Image 1: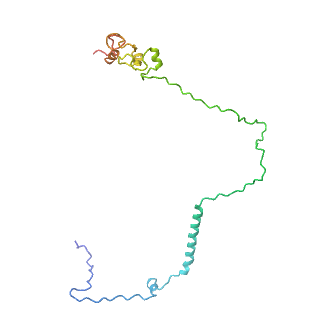
Image 2 (image 1 turned 30 degrees about the horizontal axis):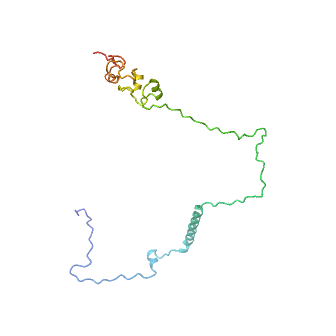
Image 3 (image 1 turned 90 degrees about the horizontal axis):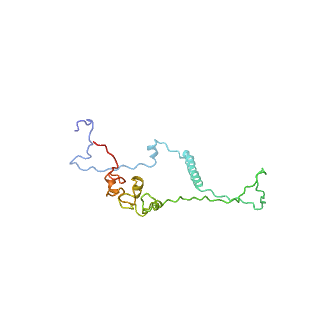
Length: 199
């Protein structure tokens, strides 16, 4: 595992060999005062007099920016403009240079538009025939199937041409609704609604 390690690496030597008495600790003497510049800057010192004008200019610039930011963030104050109340009032308000144009008549009455909603005919039983149509036919406007034959009044009048007041229009003994369900014409005895080809 350690075969590829550097051969020239030497582990640190222990401070004390086993079995030897402890060596006394000798503290490092403190650095003499005034030698800091010699150690760090090689004997040169920072000339603070050269940087002092730049520092003062930077502080003034920061103060100016802060003051401008505060001044510009405030809403503009309303200026009170004095009104001259001693000036004579102008009595001539007509600025029209063409005197031949008659004045506009502002006393014209305003006519409000009237909207009339068309009256929707009433269909109380919801069978597709209005109550007025049912009254003229003699059917019940409160019942969708006046003769209780299984067909609505509108279907009997418009689709099958049967009598909405007679449950068996063709008189064959079957109700009009039963005939339609089984594919027969309720207006003609024994006739089919649809003629299917014979096989």
